[in-house]
Image (cartoon, rainbow over all chains, first blue to last red):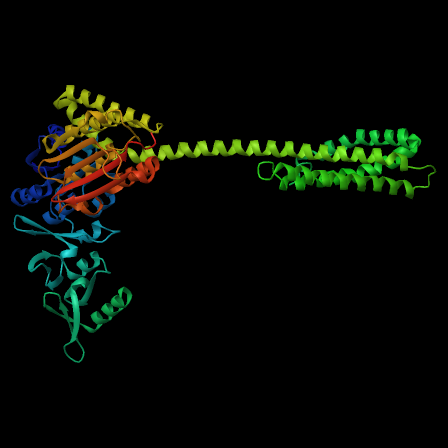
Length: 246
Length: 352
């Protein structure tokens, strides 16, 4: 027996998946969700084995939903867009169904899902980075229990490494996300965000001045007065960037 | 390239000079009282030289096109060249006669030789102008054919860009779902989709259509999207009856409404609206009477595509109205309070 969730913003599309599932009595639909927020909430609550996931949806797209739910759940993408197929397999999707699809193709996807059921979840990869090979992040999604926060990168002041997590500071609030600072740095536009220290990535637009701290190090002062340590190599990176932008 | 040298015409040209040589010999016999043998001995080399002379007439012909230069100047130039060429030719004939060990005199025949030279040179000029005219006609034809092909390609590109493939796939997916849930509705949607495709594909050929037709196309698009989005899509219309017959370039309204759905309604968790308004306004100050079309839609200000809400559709509509109305028309887009608004102003007196 497998439990499944259907996530699609179109009611007819959800009905279609449900109907095609009627031929598979071993799969039980435990939730239907019409947007990404609902999906993240329901997945945290229901812990389904299988996810039928649309890509383009209000609020959160399918990839962001997957990033927030974490690995563990087998995912079959259902979408009219063929351009996300590569991304889908980079995030270890079981299959990628292009709308419209027929029962035969659908059955094939389920067969794949069943065969992978016993296998352990693939290691948590840098989903955000892997999913966007060409362009930089425009927003960061963070899950806090059942709540989802969306932080546009323009509103991110800085990020601080805390063991396996990063603390994202935006407009006076901080959000904790399970990610390494190195992978976050890689996903952000290097013209806007600089790794000024082993533990800090800062939004250049927030930096108002630099002050000497010790003989070898400096601090960056942000527009809200917050001071962040700047290492020697971090200062070099900053100097290169400011030299280019000024 | 010289037209006589092109495509094996040289042999024809040389052959055409044989009767000329015969005519010249006859002139020498008749006017100069020379024997046929002597006449032929002078006429053949003289014609050979003059054949080359006449070839050179091509270059002034090519330089002096009738549509680009005053006719008087062309006539005077060619007449002067003809006089010089004919005089030279008479001189050449006299020179050849003098160089040969012959008795008698060529002098009495020289005026006739000069006259023949004049006629031949002008004939050559006329011939070259015919060649030029034929060439120009051929080139124009080729250009026209090329323009036709280009126009066809542009139209195809425009259509490809116009019909969003994902709209088609999603609609087909809805139909696929409806076939078991509600077969009657599935059929109805097939009909709507066919109607939409038929009118969109047919419109590319037209320069302008009545606004009522554009509105009908937009409505059939909205009917299809209503099946997909259900209660999430609310449509409001406020159309002045005076707008119906107003000629507009095709696919003016539909792409804006499609934008409203793709970048607006599709990103909303709850229901959203698309509002279409159109009316004519009276002349006001220096602003002439015009037609105003407004498309408004709700959108999620924190949504994904906030950066590209106008998208490709807005750019293509802007280009189309600029091509159709010139600077007399305007299109503006603005977002405020979770409502995106595009306003078009089209002059009533614009090119229809």
